[in-house]
Image (cartoon, rainbow, N blue to C red; front, side):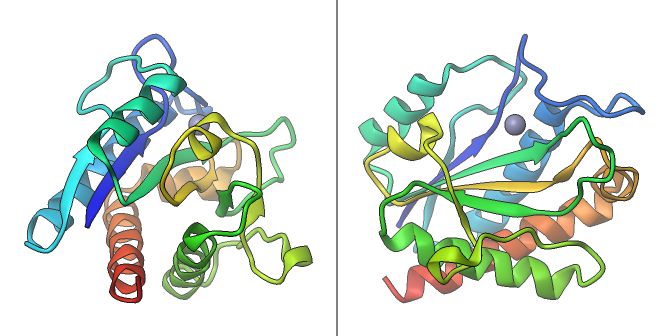
Length: 187
Ligand SMILES: [Zn+2]
């Protein structure tokens, strides 16, 4: 299976910036690189990243890279931010179509819930699964199942402390890779 990992933002677009100056783009890249490291040990998967360093890649270009490569799945990694510092938790998005991405999103969401029981899992249960639906460019412009995972809120003290921890990010990367592996076995 060809797995395209997409660390959000980069270069002149740092993404969200926390009070203690953690840049979302750096977190996204760190987690995606750790995920790639895990996936490299499994010969049945090929893994690529849309960026390997702190460079700017336009959203359409990220889709093109995945489409041209013929990726089987696209996983975008992000952190959230909101004006209200009380907003917290992880969440996962798919596009509004029903495809294999919805199941992957559920496996990821449930894996995160189990791994981080003290963290809030944000949901939209209106359609029967925990993922949220959105028309993000990387979700509608990619021709394979695509999910966008928001690790937590950099604007929230508790989430920021988690995200700042190398151990937490390592565990998060492992949980997401385990979810991809579990999902891939059922495709
Ligand atoms: Zn982002």
